[in-house]
Image 1 (tube, rainbow over the protein chains, first blue to last red):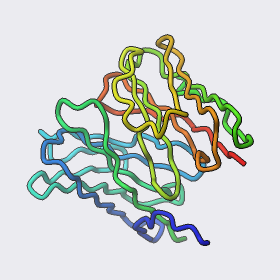
Image 2 (cartoon, each protein chain N blue to C red):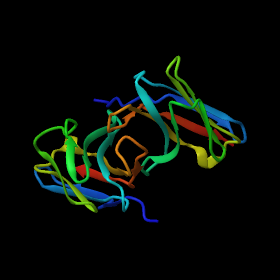
Image 3 (cartoon, each protein chain N blue to C red):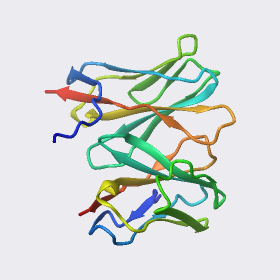
Image 4 (cartoon, helix red, strand yellow):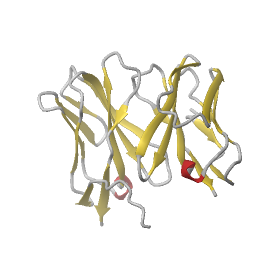
Length: 112
Length: 113
């Protein structure tokens, strides 16, 4: 029979546009969050992190926003490029815990 | 700087055979994690170590799976005997302190026929 895999949410954007990838996290006690990028055939790559005492952090072309009230995390990518095509995962760590909990991921596709 | 190193990158074996996956974490990192990734289940944490000591192996599927970390620069994940449903990509990751950013290796793609 046909196998059924995870149906990843997909976001398609035009090259050069800005992308926003969203993540709802589960635990209000989580105090550390990370965004990872996974390209086909590669391992997840650390992009940017943020602690719960902040609501915004910027990197190179990327910004992470944290809204603790609604337990929401977003990753903004400015001026998307073909190389940004990948699956993006958010991960959370609960205060005092020693392991990350990963979301299921969002597939970002860049249209030329 | 060398990142997390995994070997082999690809492994094809037959059901019933023993499989050993290897990982060298980033030098100076104290925590090491083994994950499995499949289309069906996504990214799953199998086991992790702090300072070479196994802390949580609740994600290990069965007794057929075992992991060791004899020293700070080497870990193995062993499957004996292997089964077709073990086919997946296995990732090793390390972090300076557990609970902080983990850095992943390139993975080992395992196919069990």
